[in-house]
Length: 291
Image (cartoon, rainbow, N blue to C red; front, side):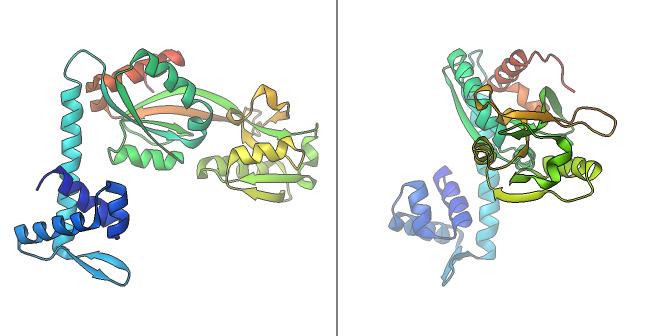
């Protein structure tokens, strides 16, 4: 067995489909069948079976997939360690990034970082902050950039915070919100709970939600066209939007804000490429110590 076999097993297990696996790995279907047959001969046991729903793995096959996943993980870690043994900052940097940060802040930051370190290859996975934390727990990324507060027992750097605000095309009054059209958008559970908690503490009637969209930038475009107001973190707004805003405050008259954090494992700093990115981010946000 070699690294290609391990990757084949893992991909086929995830896709449960030979043709789809062939497309992902850029190899032919007969080549996949040939490799599987060789593995079955080598271990003297069936690894897969084909049914109406696609490829199914036998118990022995599932055991082999778990082993393949572990070996691929160790191979990747070993490659990264070797690449970072010298003083030059090079190799692969794997980032997990909250979707909003990735949309509004990450491109400019990566442009500056790559200019400083042109020999670094950057792999980015985006998603809800809870998904990014899962990437960290599974060691699928070196560094996570997340929004909101999350329980993380290793390095946790506060980067910045911005207010959560009510945005509208025309000026509106806070007390009129329950009667005005509101545009909703999909977001992570932490922000949704924050907004819902503020609403229940402020009003006795539910919001008049007339539109429910899947993306915050779609929501902002609808607001810019005067189709309703939205309650959003200000990271998604720019000066050229020319929207009227009202920042949210708690019952104690404290501003309600959205915090952004950079997280990683202690051991990750052993990689020069990770340390370079951490130092770069701290310099961009003037942070010196972890929280």
